[in-house]
Length: 477
Image (cartoon, rainbow, N blue to C red; front, side, top):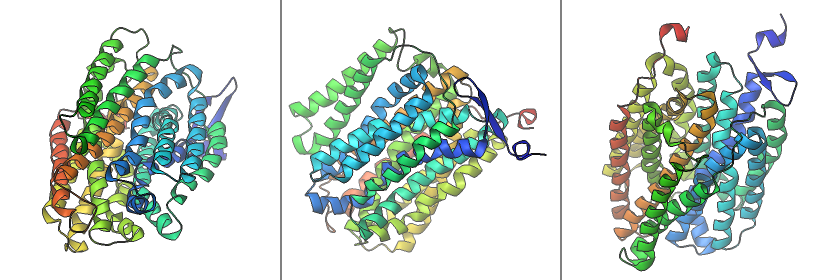
């Protein structure tokens, strides 16, 4: 028996000839670029206090370092999916890797807050092609019987990116300087492009016109709302610029949904939301991202600003939280067909909510690390239980031709959740007179984390309306 007969392979079409690709190689090629994009969601968190001092950045600018990335990421995800359908998903995937890598170089050369925010926005444009297309390319590269395992590994890699973001950021900032957190993307990008061209099929979807107007409307809408929330405390909630952002953003989103029902090539096929699994999975993605990542933004800075931890020490202290998904997510992907995605997602969200309430209830300037350790572990287990099953639930009943857009919608919703979560929780923090000082942080951080915990708790209740997601015994066999 040959090696190709003993190793699971995916038979794919790339150009005209059919060629057999080992499943492990397809998983690696799809996951490494996605890991790089996931890493950059949180890689800056431990560097923010250092950047605050080095560039003289304000609290408002600190959150734009993160939100410039997540907002452009969310805005261009669905356009990337549409371009991938038309011109080839592997082609757009490789272009996204290249844009992301070049923008990382620009971020590394930044010397002012404005330059860094602009570079992060371009990074988000490149990253927008990575998350949804990686999942779509992977799902189309493996046999159906191996797909839950492959998605589980993919989810584990996504969890690893989230996990290592603060750790790598802290280690690099402490060992070199904050600019180096962007330079580490360059060799990854250089390796990833030829690997993707070698190992993944250049699949296509419906070759229709891209909904550019839809992209503009959703981008302006989300940006306006986030801008209004960010500026609310400083400029005043009744000020013209804040009301313009909030009302204008809301109107742009309403026009976006109206336009999607009229255009022949919608950016978001609203018919997808008739599927209960897809709709509830997107509610889960939004609430999970809003509550968890908004709270992470607050808590990681608490360890440095209040407790005096170095960037590397703060990263190690959050490792039980951020590393747990690397172990739990693949296991959740394996057992999901047997126990169902609903049970895992609801349990994971409940764990996260309890952990956040626990942290908010014990947070103080003198709280020992051992007190925070247990809720960190519980939150990490919860994150791992949500990652893979929620991705599976999004694609559970999607037709082959709808998978890319379904994955794109889910990625967009999650990134919008990250941006709004950070904006709202920082608004709560600043509204409670929070400051980046040891004495002015805790009393404002507690209500912010409580808001995040409450959103995750409500999301856990909503997840109970998911279909069970349990495969029949014959299908599992």
